[in-house]
Image (cartoon, rainbow, N blue to C red; front, side, top):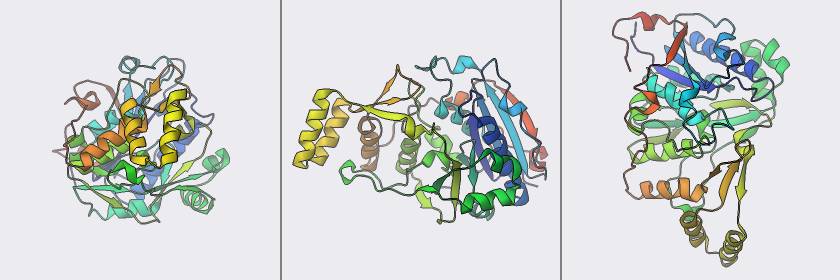
Length: 360
């Protein structure tokens, strides 16, 4: 029996009515994932991070249905108190910080390979089969497409796993496939489209990059794309899984990308149109980076303006693509590695009882 799981999936959430059926979404997706891993006999770990729980609502981890048993999957829940959230600008308006929450689990993951996973998404069986072959490369960064579908509460409540997966595969979907970056960006050609939902790397590489980069706000803008480009600059190479390897996500009105709007001042708009009319795309990119426009606002966090994508993402990614070694913003105790947090074991795997288990 192994003393270490082969893979860890890290999910994160908060019971703040993000969608009307959010708790149902999390419960069903968690049970589905554990069942997939148990049936594949894949030694695995699922970490659930309950971030900044509202005092007037029950913890989601306490409302989970019974999880499928089988001896191969450990499920750990970690509760992170409000004191760790209040340090971020915008914390009074928005109770979640996805990057910081994910880092809690990524730091404590024991698997040889680790991926963050949105709490309400579903992995195709082909992804599980690929991982279960146990031939992943230590220096690879694995990506696949996300498919957004319209999934009803009735589907989640009534369909068993096989029927639910067949339903997901049959629905019309919006596929987030690889998109080429604008050539004037001069950055590596990586599949960053919806990359926060599946970004599988070795545990060693996650510790090398020190998890997702954090800024002083709750916005977590570009953190998933930044981590991909930092990992590539530090020796990782991207492998895109076949089209049959997909992540399914139920659409809703509060998807993060739908909540972002650009903010322009009059002079910025005039300058940008002038450069576009001349076809000076590279100069346009440099000006956007230098003067930091258009800034970005996320609905629900009205007091905070995030930097432009050219300043926040394109500038460092370009530098890394041309030989600059990433200067990691995360400290050595990233993911609150030096903090003792409340932790519960919701499902115990046989490998977790073996001697010599990994200690983080």
